[in-house]
Image (cartoon, rainbow, N blue to C red; front, side, top):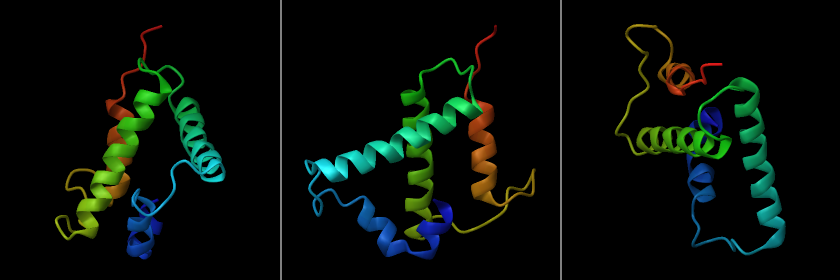
Amino acid sequence: MFDFALQYPHRYKLLWRGDLIDLQDPDLSKLMDRIYDQLCDEIERAMPEAEFDRDTVAIAFWSMIHGYLDMRLSGMFVPLDDKVSRKPRDEALLDLFKMLVPRSKS
C-alpha cells in the first residue's frame, strides 16, 4: 500500500472518494469485502493470539496506515528513517503496530 500510494498519489486519493463511487454497487462491495477479508486473514496469521477481534485490529491498522499516507501525500510528513531502529518510517510503523497489539496470555 505504501508503494502504490506514494507512486500513484492521485489514484490512491481516488480510492477514498466515496462521493465519486457507488458504495451500493454489489460488484464493488464484493471486491471491497475481499480486500478487507484478505487484510483480516493476514492479521490472524500474523497475530493469532491478539486480545482483540480481527476487525478491531484491522480498523486500527488501516486507520494508522491511511493517516500516515494521507499526511505524507499532503506534505505534513517527510520520508525519514526511524532514529532508533534506522528503518524507513513506513517499515518502522509496521513493526511498531505488531508490538502494540496485545496478545493473550495463554
